[in-house]
Amino acid sequence: MGALMEKLSCEYSDMKYSLGNTYEMTKIFIENPALFTKLMDHKRSPPPFLSLDSASAVKRRSFRGLNFASGGSGLLDITGQTMFTLMKFGTPKDPNDFLQSKQKNVVPLGEQIQQFHTVHGNLIDIMGPSRTESLLSKSLFFISTASNDIFGYYHSGSTIPKEEFISSLGIAYEKYLRTLLSLGARKFGIIGVPPIGCCPSQRLYNATGGCLEELNGHARAFHATMGALMEKLSCEYSDMKYSLGNTYEMTINVIENPALFKFKDVASACCGSGKLNAESFCNPKANLCPKRSKYLFWDLFHPTQTASKLAALTLFGGEQRFVSPINFAQLAAA
Image (cartoon, rainbow, N blue to C red; front, side):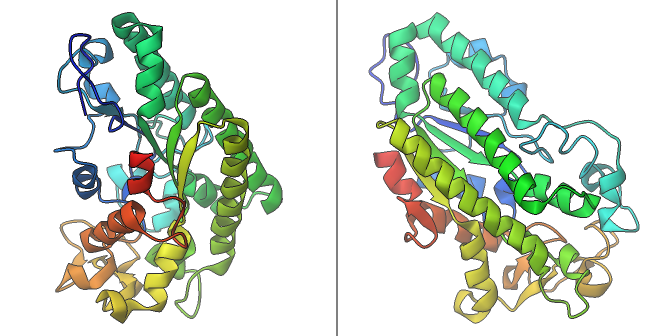
């Protein structure tokens, strides 16, 4: 990956931009950022947008992209503004009490797109429209979002029909993707919603300790929506390339075949307390499992490092059952 300075000979295909939710970037079988970065031949992950002066950053020889993702955010502007913040700032008696939190400290996807728009302007100022268009057409845009939206919808007791809600997520996603396309993006790595009903925290709602299948149904419906959306957009934009990571199938495959992946426990959290170690968040007083590499889940929501590593490898080089129509390695080379 070359730098952005006019005087350099550049190869732009490895430029990376990440948008969405940073929690989801490491949630049930999505990606290990450090490993994924190495697989893409980068030494480190792109820096957070808010940690830099974007105009100065794009001038650097070492500039290789930016990370706009915000923990706890979602597709909808309201998501994360009233939930998930207690995962950072406290340990409620009920893990789902975070739904009632009124702290506002996340950057929704729409605002992340606006931040990228600022970077787009910086690039044009430095490189000019033609080189900016060339750069962005070869850059990789990774987006992982919607789990938090679905969690919020499900636990809010909303009377909006599931089909209508999932459709609204698809409409919002299409709006943001079209904005990125209008700004020159052409290569997308889309990471789907995993079986969030199988999180230890959600298994508590099932008397048998099994997955919360109604919540999993929402995840499956969203993946189908995204599959149709990406196919439609790729027909409209002949030069668009994409990979859609089916994290639902990836995770279910592990849950149904734990021994194949050397996992001992795919239901409980390694760090927590109570039933399934999922009745509280991981903190200094929590119970800790003896060997975290044998667990699928680190805490009541998130995977272990071992699980994240497996996710990254699958997204990068996996078969079409798990990532289609091409995997992330093929996307980078396209």
